[in-house]
Image (cartoon, rainbow, N blue to C red; front, side, top):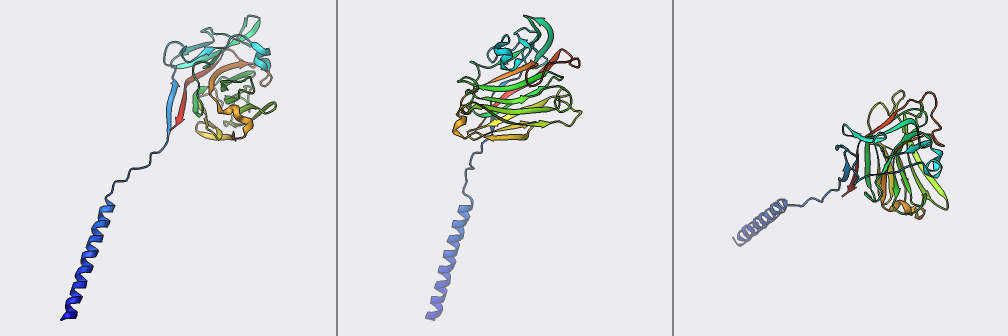
Length: 276
């Protein structure tokens, strides 16, 4: 009888112990766990060009044709006239014209956010429909806040040189810096000919952080570069934005008999995002 009583007692202890453990496990399963926050791209600045005039809080104009055609032997004279840069139907339009003006045969516009809008790192994009033709050179790009070129750094988000196959359908992304002289690197991407960038809008952009710059066309990455070397320090400062249409120059060459004017670059919007 004593042995039977002891056996019953042990069984009861086991049941009570197992029951307590089950309750403890059940309590743990109901604990509320706070999820780890995830980062994403957050829009911190934009110009949608929805007003009637170019926003002077965001943009100013380059005027003239300095440094031997802005250092590239370009042929246009940049103006701030509303015939060369204006807002229409929710677009910024930069228009290149063939006309005699201040001793030049072409006019256009170049706007920039210098002394107004600066950022360091992020995703920078614009939705643009480009012009086309031999000698036409549209660009969406950035320059560093301090330093004399190339020591200020330059990030060309989009450049295109017009003039037919492998030109009107091809855009470039390039970075410039100073390493005991001018250095540059970049890549390109093409549309399937006969599609050209003048046919429709496309989104041109870069993602830029402490380690890399990556170039994208319509969300497709086509080039990236490591910017961690100490010789690329100028690429780790604040930058401002530029938009322009050049005519002629060392790279595209001059317009010819096939080039029609006016040529227009339509900018639907420009946006800057931070990863946070």
